[in-house]
Image (cartoon, rainbow, N blue to C red; front, side):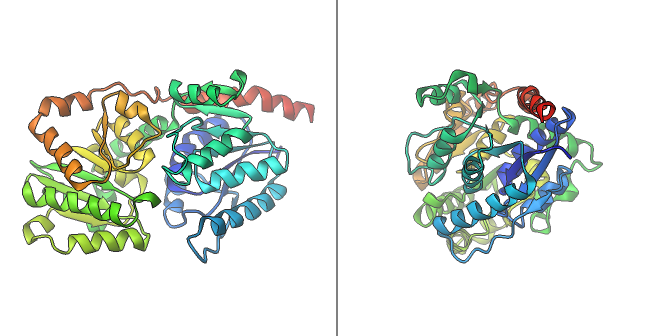
Length: 390
């Protein structure tokens, strides 16, 4: 096999957004190898299966603490070793995870060219989101190809001195991935209902005639008081309005899970019957829930993008966002973690249905679903030439 393009991924969002890129590279007859970094383990393998991908190498991380230095040191060493074995012609990383930064560093040490998918996102606050803002900024100093999702991202990279011929405006591959998932669900006899876990049994009946709130919150900067305040807002909405049903796939981290459980234990029986707390959902079940959601409350960057692709209004549970396009398009609101602000924003949408409809009707600023084919088209001439020269 010729020296492959090695795609590094290890978290749920990376796998989802890189899956259509993987397909496009293979369709362009480019050799590809997948390196799973192990940053997310239990959530990763069902996604690989769903998208029909099998990693050539998988790293088994030995996490002895949640310290970032511990994680990054392991990743850098293990990825470097994997690269020496796989002998890439180029390395593709995605976004702003610790896996992406370590892979870009390891590639640099071996003088391998790096392609950065979803390049140029900036909140312009080094500690929000933390450590993602600095991760993606540092990757921007190491990358050869910068695949930017929006004109704002292009502008960010240009201001940082990245040469114009290295920046490629291609859109966001989340649009491609969402389309794959929606088509998959549409092809199932029950529309995907059978994919829901047992913890969501009865959800389809519960949402009939009601508004579904999908809640996700996991960011490090929201641990503790932030998660507690978000949970209090969801509890209050359920108590005050019997027209709401909430689904909350709670992150496995005990700091998140225990906080949510502590707040929700005081719910009345009537409100508790309309709260579905579940484990993190695989991609297809999450898309099923998202398709039926009335509004999404999230601190996730990827879910902000998926919400637009599904035309669901989104409340961003953060003080800053590196995806200002969501706000500028009118599809989302930046509400932070204050429970009063969250409740007020959701209630305003109930009282102003025209506003809710406008948020559902915005143009998607993240592209038209051709991102992955564009990336393959940009890489193919250079890497085909490299193979011929070799």
